[in-house]
Image 1: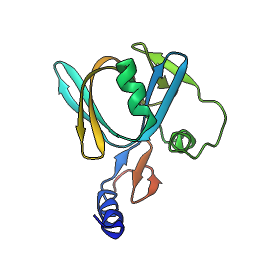
Image 2: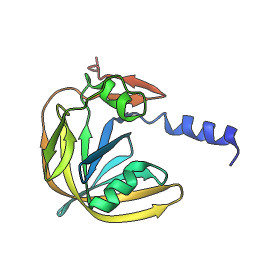
Image 3: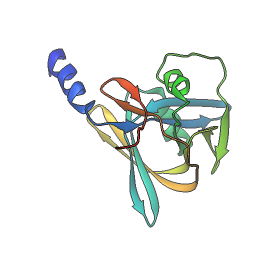
Image 4: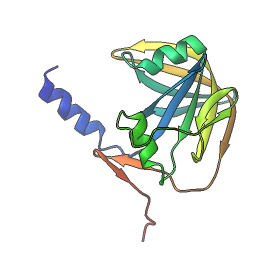
Length: 157
């Protein structure tokens, strides 16, 4: 696909407003995370979710090697955390929590600790299915992303 077509397809996908997550994993003493918006629930029984990770992403190896990962749904005030894990660091240290034996982002509005159930290489990404071992959530507003920009929720009139 030509670069123009790739950009145009990315623009089309960007029309879908999403929440912002950080996918994190620990391998030994090292924790690695990445910002992602390819996240979805899969099953309530057993509880499962999926994330899509680029095949070239360092996080993929961490997750596959450790057999586990965390998903942190970021709060409206966590834009700098999203930027940090998207490769635009704004601070030196990230405060992690542990949930279900995997690292998650402290202060996220929803956190899921998962064991890696399945990995499906598909195109330039791998679909990772995680079995949810633990989760937590609160009622703070989410950080949203649409058309290349961060967004916030506003009540409908």
